[in-house]
Image 1 (tube, helix red, strand yellow):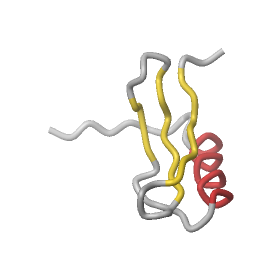
Image 2: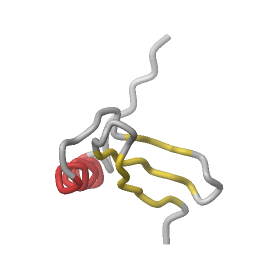
Image 3: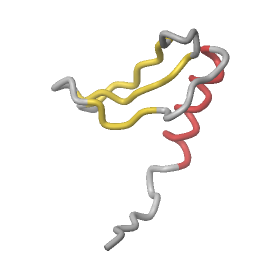
Length: 61
């Protein structure tokens, strides 16, 4: 079981966004952009879940 949950919500501009929220309430990640539909926001978060589990990490100086 994960300590984080994805949330899909509608923002004040009427666009849909997702965010990953830790059980302590801190936002770990967010969509960074609004989507025209809830379905598109859900597709975006599914893409992150699918495509980034083994992503490289780059640390800039």
